[in-house]
Length: 282
Image (cartoon, rainbow, N blue to C red; front, side, top):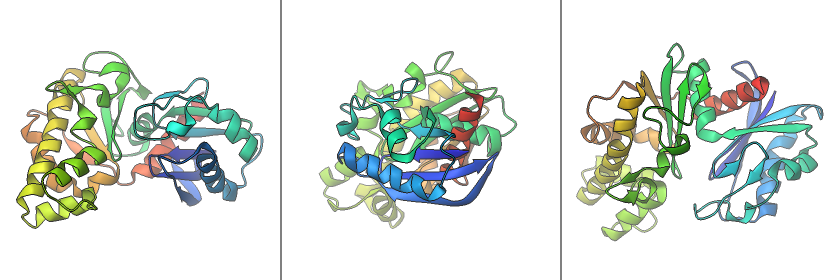
């Protein structure tokens, strides 16, 4: 089954057979502030080498806000893909790559579903997947289904809609928030999260304070939800998890009595597998 995983900075395309990626994952960069034409060209460029059957339905993992049932982009005020607002992404992509149809789902739900089915959370009944990258995504899984309500589940299943001391979580914990806080503390304006983490490892006090505050905000927001949900495992993925050994103590300090935490071995593969599973079920 052909699948797409669309993130804030990249798009990946692959053919998935069960849990296995067939052949090579095709990856192309995306500009979060690019035009609709640039977005469509990048996605079509990643999809083209798969030479998928025109009769196939594609599984597509894509961030919100998005109308997943209708395939229409609703991005506004989230710092990415603003040019797509109102676009029928399914129709536009179908015309580009010759697909019969698309089964869209949230990218964090796809990641969590893939981890439940094939990854670190396999064998659990209740697990949560959190992606840490451009923003904070979350998927809440009960018996192999992504849920958006119930004890501990944040509004619509989206942890980024939570607040910490009245401030939206992503204004405290996200790539843009960490970089802005680091600049405000006198850090290198060009430093990205990995650079700030490296500085913290080297003993830089400002970098350490910025990251401790960001991970503390995540723990304060997410911890009560995880406990009320009854999560057996939290799986983290995304570009920031290369520094999770540094981050986890700060996260746990703000969120005691948490379930075990596992770092996804391959978050992209999990999201692709989750998107394929969703498309098959639909």
